[in-house]
Image (cartoon, rainbow, N blue to C red):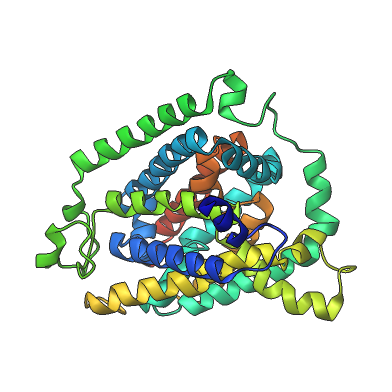
Length: 382
């Protein structure tokens, strides 16, 4: 009886965000924002240094978030199989294809290095007081409008001719194995990479300049600590898969929220005829949970975490031109690819989507290549 009452309060894809949904979205966003701030993966220099293999904070947190997501979904597939399968089917059906994912992920990677951020991370940067983060956001919002205009005539026709060159869409269906077996296998591989990185580069030795540990930092989840182990922060992000899928029938993501924000006024001005249908669909009521989760919850979580631990406005952002162009590239790339660092990298990998498993290395390939090119041209921002 209690469960059926709760389900009536839960948001479905066709209903507005309820009061309960709003609260859940804010709380999940606060956990996300606080985790990225405590893990210090939000700092622009950390992201750029990761691409040059000088720091491994980002890799540790990213792989731990993927590991935690895989384990969470493996458990969910056993105790809530119907919700797990319906959500998974919805997300996989939105795959845009192998070529689109490859091209979009490469562009996204270029933007990540130039901006020192990613679509979700930049909102955390706003909350934590990183200068010029707002310029990245403007670049991202601009790109979302450009995608809305170009998607219909240019991008969508390409997708129909470029489906993934796989017999099936997921790892488990490709190998004809149960989801949980494949998920736990991939989780073990990700965890092994993290263990090796931590062994050779302990997290306390890998902190960015300006972060000095305090007495609270010996307690991994202390809210006033200046930094947490990136592994702990990553696990918390991955666990968010459960409430997001249960309450919103969706996966963790960030880039769609930019389109939701810009599509509302442009849909009213231009109508749906001149804009991509997928772009105007972003203004649907079912997508507003992500706006609340990211732009309210994550901002608030990052601000409270950084302010009360004494590290607010810890670091400046990159040059304004790099920030704008980087924000533009990472949003445009994520829309072409059908997912961002969270959408493909955390949720897509957890779905065992073959398209996401192609997009993620392409994303980092674009970011790493850009970082080394800037380094070689003596134009590196760090």
